[in-house]
Image (tube, rainbow, N blue to C red; front, side, top):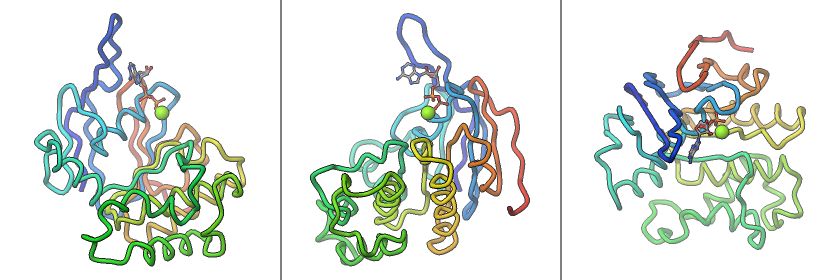
Length: 228
Ligand SMILES: Nc1ncnc2c1ncn2[C@@H]1O[C@H](COP(=O)(O)OP(=O)(O)O)[C@@H](O)[C@H]1O
Ligand SMILES: [Mg+2]
């Protein structure tokens, strides 16, 4: 379970910005939660704090009982590598590496310590996202939707318990966006990952089983949705 308690994030500078103003939220194992809100409402900030990419100004994030404020250095890197998968709007694939190499990349330095074969796992994840026949393609030889599928395979390669996706459909056309959210729904079932997806798009959020609305750094609504 992810528990956010009174989370505050103020970005310093000459005119400090209160990006989060006391967010309290729980995400339970197996849920697919969408965080929806307009641009600037604090969605990315929230996701970065859950994924231990950033530190709160006040409050805390607990993941499966571990207080992220207490993790430093190697323990923080281990937490991210073992527990979290991240998907971004811009895919962030390396253009000179094939799809397979991109998926293996985050775990490549650890390949000898893993309990599984990295190459086989990466191939399996590319097949799971429908790209079993594209493993040797470079990102430039793939469509936007296919590139995001590679990024999802990369996020899953470490068997993460939590998949965090920041506007994963923001660069895709409407039809492809819905395919990608459909894929996330399937991945949630097949791989038992808990998904927190950030979006400004209500039609994307509608795929989740719960929608949390953010405005100006505060939660303004939190509602379960019937299966679509
Ligand atoms: N590194 C930063 N430094 C200063 N202000 C920031 C930084 N990142 C985000 N902000 C500000 O914090 C607020 C929330 O940003 P963000 O979490 O990126 O919102 P969203 O993802 O919902 O668009 C915005 O007002 C934004 O301008
Ligand atoms: Mg954002």
